[in-house]
Image (tube, rainbow, N blue to C red; front, top):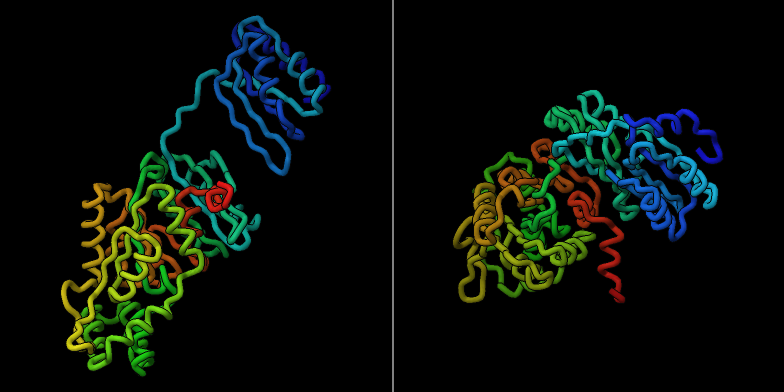
Length: 406
């Protein structure tokens, strides 16, 4: 209360029994406010129990829990401090005992537009299951809006279920996962390739060069929807390539286009110390080129058999199918000595389901409906680097790291 008469609060603060107050400061920000405030509290002998501060559009919002020595009166000093700096200060006597808080949930909201309707619906979903929003932070304004909510509550699974059910009705994506140390630890990120890291299906690019794209695309779509066994569909499609010259594969590699944000995504993960892997039901001709270009640590895919400079219409070695992808996630995690609960897997098709389930966090990226329903988190924005926001990375941090002056 600026220039007010804090009679009731002042009387309370003079009591020997009540000596813990919440001080709220709000006003135009400028350098030195926090330093001067701390000097004032030190001079009065007050102690600090907790501090939180944010800046919104040039305005300071600062909250402190202050322990006032018995018999001391700091109200007048604080009000004079606010008057000098043209900032609002008010007070509230609070319980001296800290609030115990167990780890809750981290909720990330992403969308081209996040309106009061979306926020209100999600806040209602949290409240109706006994949850509470403890903190909201904006992570990004572009390429999409992204906000992070820290949510507490006893029924974490109930809150999660309520949020995801509500998210189905909104025009934004909502990611929900557990708060805790594992979220901040060094991780392994495993990506599918076709229609995830890159925009195309490599097998369809090969088919296009071979003149049988429509035939292969129809089989691929049925397999991705889970209507066909992947291994059977793979052999059926590859058989169409029998007799093609191996030089054709070089033209295929040249046609591959990365998903928007892919370079930023991988580059930022590497800066954070994450290990990266690609696990593809496609072919090594693509994964080897991508791993070399982007600096990806591990790459696995199916190998097209070649004899005397021509494709035989067969694959050799391990078949990277739905089951194989999950096995490779476990294998790579073991090689890197990273627990599975610190693995993030990203994919879009039915053959990615086991891989997403094996990881601590499975993300369906512009995925088929069957995958969206089963994954931990679903994103339908066209930018791969938006996944960084789900991991708690701010857009400003990404831009600063990419700046040539950094």
